[in-house]
Length: 309
Image (cartoon, rainbow, N blue to C red; front, side, top):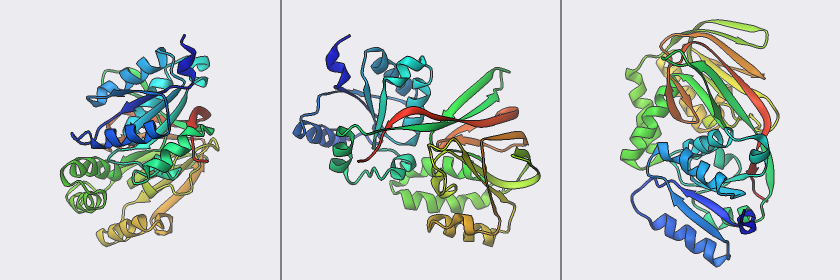
């Protein structure tokens, strides 16, 4: 194995626009700081895991994802397929460039401040972070699992997150796409019959949405810490349309847990016995509806992540 790869970065660039200007800007900043690196570029969602696997197996010890939450999700799921010895030798970092960059924002990595981000990454300060995991059965009857850095949404917000991703690609603005998505949700189903076990509590009723966060959960689990071995859960019971918009305002202003219909929990696992017709999104990407019951837990401090100084 080439010893140079111990310090050379493998950079996976996930473009959100056809223009290559941001890539050129990144390369300029890296060259100015004399960082040794190799670029690979994903052409589709399916190619991210393949390219991360290629970087790992070619010996890169620092892998930087230029992308958003979904690209990071693909990267960690690829990394988790490796043996522990291999996984422990790799540090994962992010340069925000996605439709949604919630996990990067938690660490104060900002798309608008590329130079600061690169300077932090160069210092190679590593923090082991948690991964949540959803274990479920797919439509073929196969036992599956998917890891997440940020959160899982079940119900209405999974639908909104999917709409937000679609409208962001059309509208360009994160805020505008969110507002349009919230407006469109008026025409969608507003509650789901759920049977959920959290700690000693059993919830068996209609629920509007549930967020299970190892990270900030797009504002729904704002107190979650991605290295304490716990999951934060925010469950929202069915409420009137005016209360929905009041909840949206509290979400935007960072006071989501103050809404009277929000019921927070902290736990190591969540058992979803039933969630009829409720869509599920993992780190902002729609997963669809698992078949039957599914289980969500957390693995503590299992991924090496590059954090700010």
